[in-house]
Length: 372
Image (tube, rainbow, N blue to C red; front, side, top):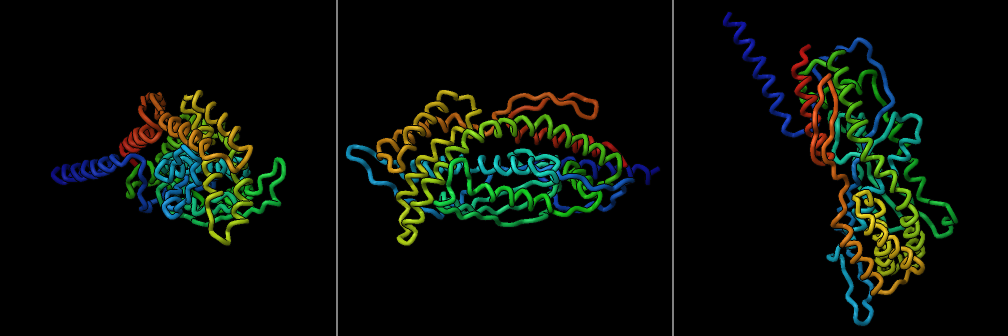
């Protein structure tokens, strides 16, 4: 009898420790399962989640030279936020380009946008922009499993020339198709995704990955993808084509300037191109609901892009519009979401990240109670 009570206490303690880990939401652990007992271990087409690209290092290293001010005008420098506007634009736009190419690859099950790593994806892609000056783009990608293990990393680059730019031709597109193809070729073992998914949601490296637990984790992943990730992904991909033309224009105008001035390391002309590119920021983030700001940014872009050597006053005008519009920018405002999982209806609240944290906590609690 005492032995039975002692066993119960140990079981309760193990459950408590597992649930205590839930405060980290969807943060993944990197432990391997002690036991995998799947009746039918199979391979699957990977489902990929792409996070916003990190390009902070690029702008920390770069020290742009501000264009000369026109008489009676004031120029915003890097402190004025222009590099930040470009950075905000690229981090989501690059994610959208990779998602589109992944969705177009037959070896990929699906691809989504997420602000945080999620057990709902077999591959979580973390990207970093190492260089982006219009002419050359260098990105570093790291892929992690649903339970946080690093699976793969690689660097991709494209270096365009002025001669490559023709009507309706984007010479940098090859970068994204190559990256998507490489991710699709990451090897997997039968049952690998089911096990990683279960561990990722359970937050318990000692859990037995059996058919029941794998089925629960599979249901959770399906609900998270369809109800949490797909809506924000759809919004991002709807506005990405609007931004594409502006970004391509910036690349086209910047490339000959980089070619002509690379020997002297003069960045003034490139900075003007960056100022123009900033007007496209709201195209990628226009689903924030501020349609007036979006239209204003678009009008300024059309006026300014006719000539790369725009006046300092026009640059200042564009920047002011961007500063105002950036205040309304939000990757995903979220709100309240009703989901049904494991036969129960739950209400999720807040941003996408907050909703994912609530959702993962629910799944982990149910897995801890699932036995097996």
